Amino acid sequence: MLAETICSAASAAGLGIAAVTAYRKRFLAATRIAAYSLVPIGLVLTGVVEWLSDIVFKPSVWLGFGLLGLAWLLFMTTRAVERRGGGTRKERKAAARAAQNDAVAPAAAAPSLGAGAPAERPQPREKSKKQAAAGGSGDDFSDIEAILKKHGI
Image (cartoon, rainbow, N blue to C red):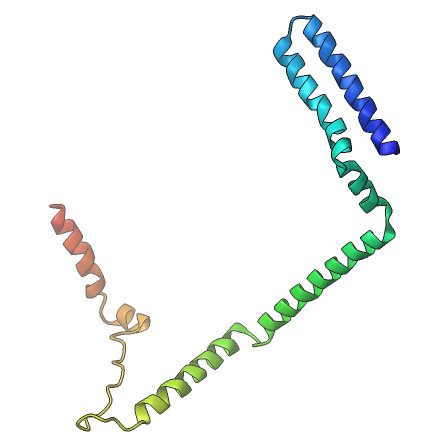
């Protein structure tokens, strides 16, 4: 009841200001003020103000919001614990490699239906970063030389 009265008074005041503005021959501004002043009374007539006042003044609604917040907090806590469940990053990577090796090993050991050719093993990497830096720094500069030759330098 109080909220509806306040909204009605605000609308009446806004329409009064719009009338004074229109009297001063500022019709565009007066129309804009009138539009803004009709919003509170429109909210009252649609029932939005009553709905909001029911939400604000009922303790059961606040209890419901509290329970929703608690549910969200529990959900986020379980996700954080689940992410940390694998230990450190190194431990998670080691566990992932072990799981990958376990998955690859039975496939390689399984008998094939082909002519009995041995299963192909993955090729080792060409050079590690330390080996490339220590022994073969010429490979690194060959790319640069090719770019410089391309541009005629």
